Image (cartoon, rainbow, N blue to C red):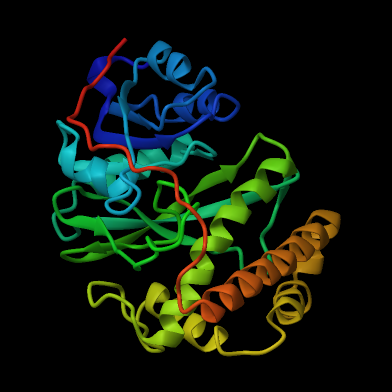
Length: 312
């Protein structure tokens, strides 16, 4: 067990829902943090029990169906005792060498946040081609200076209660850490498909907003000559307008970006991305056909709650 004296003054935020397969390894990897919050969405499995047994503070989040979602709500409401927050998803791990780098990085007064590079594993294989690596995410920052952007996707139901593809808007300078974080879901492909079915609802709404020009002003802008996130946003705005996107997605991933070098896992991943793009396209068509409104009854909104922290 890591001693209290060696703890790193960082508060870890882990959003969770029915994650008993992933949580043990995730929690073990963040044991060096001074404080760990698991923000749960009424899990029906052993997620809360696992989190509490590790010493994490468990908070329940009740989504109101609109905004804010889980991470922004947590950043605004949790009683963090540290200036720095590290956001880690349940299927992610923070290796020891990255913790060493974090401990040194947070002492640098020139930066208010740091990008971490994710190493994505699929079917036990590191997907290092196909544009999946490097995969920079702003996950370590001073919590008072950063919030996730709102891309106005709330009109579409069944997108989940957690920010997934939104980016953090941070006040101040940002740096980059050298060591990778690990992204590997210990659940099966069924859960990958289930998750991306929700994601495609979100993506379809983003496509619709791009075409309709209804994106919020408080978002990360598209700029070909900006940082990595701004360039990615610029290319996505072009991508939305292209025809034959499912086929193009596979060709881009598997051939142009050398996804074939990742073997069978790379081929399967490329085919799944193509299928995912087709789902987005169908839902995008549905949104356009009905003027941005879907004839679907969303789950009833639950009332917001006050913060109640449960500690082991």
